[in-house]
Amino acid sequence: MSAKTILYVEDNEVNRRLVQDLLIPTTYRLIEATDGESGVAMARKERPDLILMDVQLPKISGIEATRTLRGDPAMASTPIIAITSFALAGDEQKALEAGATAYMAKPYSPRDLLGLIRRLLPEGEAKA
Ligand code: MN
Image (cartoon, rainbow, N blue to C red; front, side, top):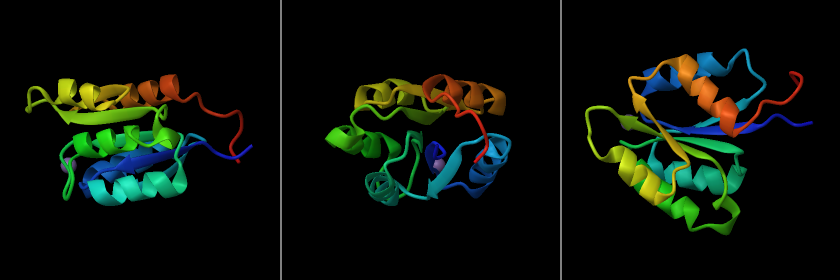
């Protein structure tokens, strides 16, 4: 059984490191992109099983990237978790309207994020 792949689209290196650390003890495989445009391109190429999408991104926003991916039949039902900023009111609603499955507002507890990931994409049995 191949590992379930999570694509994390995030421009902030510290946040990427946190999620890398969060997923180390799991069986998920993590791939990353650092702006909205390359996030869309990587999603189309790699067909991840779940996408973590930061909203505030260079080039195209996470909202627009989510909308674009939802327009692609191959990505129509892929779980997308929007990572919103608590300070920016309205982002949650925009993300859901664009097609995000769920959202997590920053600052979030890593434990909560992992719980949400596992709920939307149950982890495989054994570490490959
Ligand atoms: Mn960002």
